[in-house]
Image 1 (cartoon, one colour):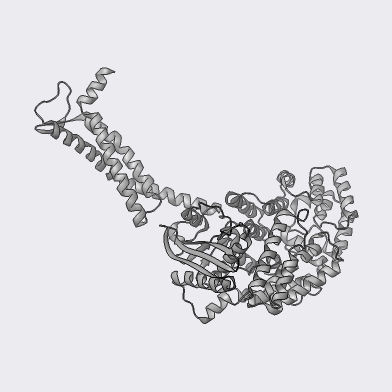
Image 2 (cartoon, one colour):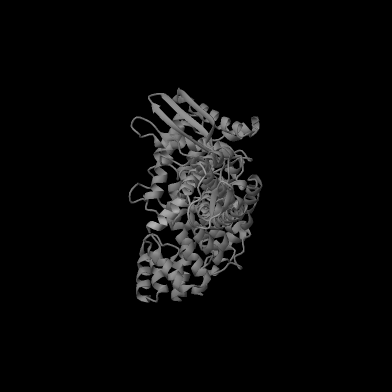
Length: 613
C-alpha cells in the first residue's frame, strides 16, 4: 500500500487530480452563471456535470501514464524519477494534464448533449401524455400567464376571501383577451403557500409568466401590490404598489390588468377594455357581499351540508343583489342550493316545486342582466334544460358554440352546460372540455369532463387512461372515482367494477346496493334498495343495482317514478350523460323520451353497461 502511494506521488497523480478538481469547479461555476443569464435549457447543467465527472479518471490516467521531462511529455516507463525539471514547471505541466483532461472530456460534449436532449424530450413527451406537464419550453406561448392568489396581509389575517376575490377579478379580466393564455382559478389557487418556486409553478401550469401580489386592508384604506414575473429568469417585468381608498378597488383591479396586458404586448382598444371590465358590478359593497357568498359556497361544496347549511351563502348573494339590482353573477351563485334540492334531494324546508320556481327565477335574472352574450346563453340553456319543454335547446346550443371562439372556455358558473352538451352537441362538448383542461390542468373537474367525453364516445379504455393521467397530475378525486366506476361498467370488467365501487369515498346507499349486486350479495342489495325506495329521495343510480339483479319490474317502477318528478327528465339526462349508459327502458320514461325528441337527441347508439346487460 505504501509503495502504491509513493508511486502515485512520484507520478504526480495526486497533484493532477487536485488540479483537475480546481479547473472543473471553476468551469462549473462559470457555466452555471452563464446558464442563468442566457436561458440555457434544463439539460445543460446536468450534462456538463456528468462530462466534468468523466474527466476526472481521464486526468488520473494521463498523470499515471505520462511523465513531464526536460525533453517534453513522454510515456512513463517506471523506475527512478527523471531529474532536472524545475518544480514550478513540473507543477505547471501537472496542471496542464488536468486542463487537458477537462478539454478531452469537453470534446464529448456534443455526444452527451444529444443524449441528454433526447432524454429531456422523451421525458417531456411522457409527462405530456401523462398530463403532468405541458410540453417543451418552446411550446409555452410568451403571452401566457397564471395569476396566483394574492397574500392577505391584513392585521388579523381575516381578509383572504377579499384577496382571493381581487385575484380572481384580475384573472377573469385577463382571460377575456383572446390572444392571452390564462390559467384558470382552480389550478392557480393550488399554489397558495409561501416560498413558492415561480419557475416550477410556471412549468407545471404551462405558462411563461406569473402574477403574484398582496392585499392589506385597514379601515377604509387599501394597499395592493402586484408583480408580473417572467418565470424563465425571475425578472420582474412589472411591479406596482397602490395605496388607495377601499372604494377605488375596481380602479386598482383595472389598472393591474391593463398593465399586465400592456407589458405582455397585448393590444387594448375600447372594445377589448369593455370586454375585460364590462362584467360584474361597480358597487364595492355588493362585490364584497358576493365574495363572502362565494367563499361560503365553496366551503359548503368542500365540506358538505352536515357542516354548513346548504343555503348559508344566500344571505350574502341576496345582499349583493339588493345593493346592485343588476348583479347577474350574484344570481348565479344564489341558484346553487335550489339546484341541489331539485337534482340531488338535498334536505330542505322547500318543496321541489318551490325550489324549482326559485331556481328558474334566478336563471331568468341572470339571463336578463348578463353582461356578455355567452353568459346570457349559459343561463338560457340551463333554464330550458330544467323546464318542461326542450324545443329551444338545439338553437341555444348552436348559438353558444358560435359565441365562444375556439380555444376559449365556458363562462364561470356554467351550471349544467357541459352535461347538456355531452349529448346535445358532443363535438362542442369535446372542444370546450379540451380548452378547459388546457387552461386548468390541475382541475379534477376538467379531467373528469375529458373522461366523460370518451365514455360518451363509447371508449371506456380511453376514459380509464385519462383517469390514470389525472391521478398522476392532481392525485385522486371523487369525480375521477365516479368516472372509473362508469368506465369499468361500460367495459364489462366486473372485478374492476367491484373494486372501484368499494373504493368510492362517498357513503351513498345506491352505490352500496350496486356493489352488493355486483358481488352477488343479493339479500344485501335488495335490503338497501328497499330502504332507498322508502326514503323521501331515491338516488337514480339505484337503477344500476336493479339491472344487475335482473329485477326488471323494480327498474321500470323506479324509472317511471323519477320520470314523473318536475325535473325528472333532467335527472335521467344527467344520469345518462355522466355514466354513458341508460340502465332503464325508455318506454318507461315518457316525459324523458318526449324531452329528448324535442331536443333532437337520439340515444339508440349510446353504449350501455355491458356488465349488467
